[in-house]
Image (cartoon, helix red, strand yellow):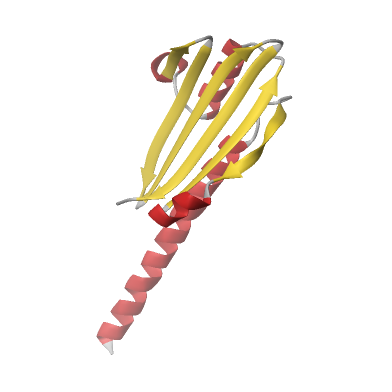
Length: 134
């Protein structure tokens, strides 16, 4: 009897922990996928179903804004709670990249934002990925 109660308690703790991790990561992924203020979606949001077989979920969104690349880069750096100086990679061709990765319990979350100057403004490509730890 005592063993069954311990098993039920352990299962409940595991379920609550996993649900909390999923809710946290989903909230982060959804928040990051929101576009830069005033940006227009250029391409439909793509979800890669092939990645599900390997335990990952990947989403790509592409936006455009008339704002300058430096302004957009600072906005995403603040949004991801990272320092623009330490996490922004200048990729050449008037592009920069802001990224963040974190692990909560067994779920990894990463976001890569590519920000490129184009004629008349800036193009923003946001790639968010959730994955189960190996």
